[in-house]
Length: 97
Image (cartoon, rainbow, N blue to C red):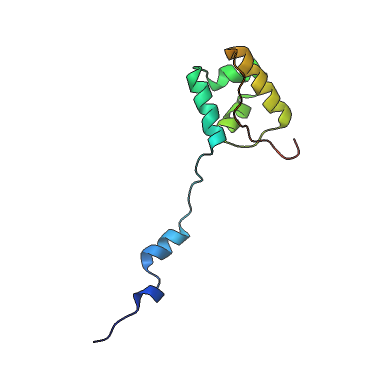
């Protein structure tokens, strides 16, 4: 009886999984920001207007894309004006911004 050593052979499934592109998991900073907005019933547009930044800036925070340090400061100030609460969650910053 001949035995085939399966451990040394790549299975088609293993090869398929290793070549599959994956979506990155959402980070806690983006999720924390979204939870804060939901808790205070704030829209992206309302936050953008209160902060004096483009709505894309707020969208970038929710998707954990980096923004400039000055934009983050404006967003935090806008959130404080809208809610009376200081947002202490993370915001991803650009290295040179």
